[in-house]
Image (cartoon, rainbow, N blue to C red; front, side):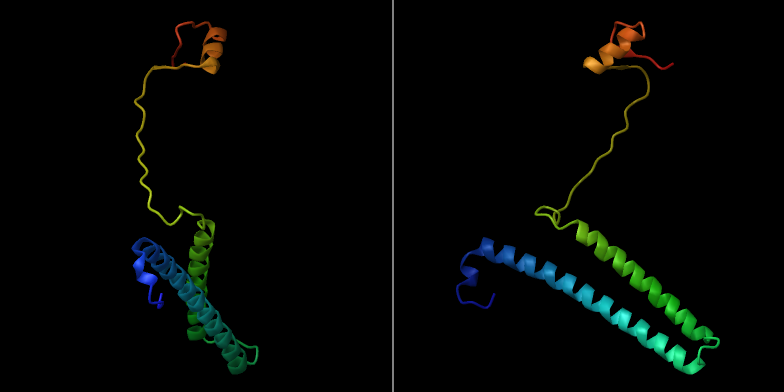
Length: 129
């Protein structure tokens, strides 16, 4: 991106910039997760030193539970990102769901026709039983 002719091709520069931003964000998430795991290990060591294997103070238990929850959330988010690594997975999508009205429906195709014929109906309309 620092090359003198990098910005000559705006389309290519935008593609590279977008990919760079996406990868930088992922790297930051992995770094944050590694930091959280390090914090948890330090707390566990501290708890072991303070208690000598006896009861762990409530404050440490609460902090460990919070860290474990945060780590779990981050791992789930990273796992979801791992599933979407295809060429078009970074784009947006719009999904519309339109419920079908209830009542008799005309069905077509061999499966419906055979089903209707065996059921004694030849008009191709499936009726609720």
